[in-house]
Length: 309
Image (cartoon, rainbow, N blue to C red; front, top):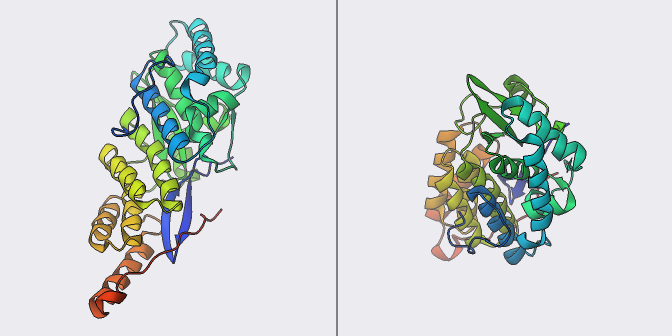
């Protein structure tokens, strides 16, 4: 039982860390008001979906097209959860989402739509990240203190409560799993401030934006990829993978100084990040070639391949 949220993509001998959809936008569109989304998190997830629809051509419904289904789900949850709190509220919410409403996980398909909230609502199907967006948005409606948590290759949720917390594993229909299970299954590094801690909503949004950046990068829309990765690093500074992929895009456009700075930040945050040593070695080679070759031969285009599965 796995959720392949991270995968390695090869780019002319470079490795990039890619958060796939299996598992704010300050200058995008205005927030959708008509759909009845009652939290900043919901608004921003809808904006992310709209960017994927309008700029990447993702075939997903508009927020207003799923507003009725969403409203029915919210009313059902309010009626059933009521004033419940803590583990009991999570137990009932799990029943509503996974059993009664029929939402299911997707762990094979890497379609970006599986992380987008309107698509998840319409199709009752999502990646670990897509199900997390649904669950978190519903939790905001119910005033439940549930937050996102990131580990390598996976994303799950956590209920905060007095004296501790309860983990919510979305690929197991909300089952409570201990931290040690995540450490062993997803090989959580000892030194990384991004992993196994509760994230703020803005940090959670950054994980979604990281996906958009990856799609832009794979489609060689480098200017947009850079903007998204820079936004991610602003929102979630400890996210080493975002710094590493920002460095990769700078490297592909021969902005070697910015690439070096981004790689250095990634190495500071996560020294053993898979692929980072290879990227740094390739960068040093390019810098060496640049210093010794004639100016007209110092830039080389890198061709993007599809991510390894």
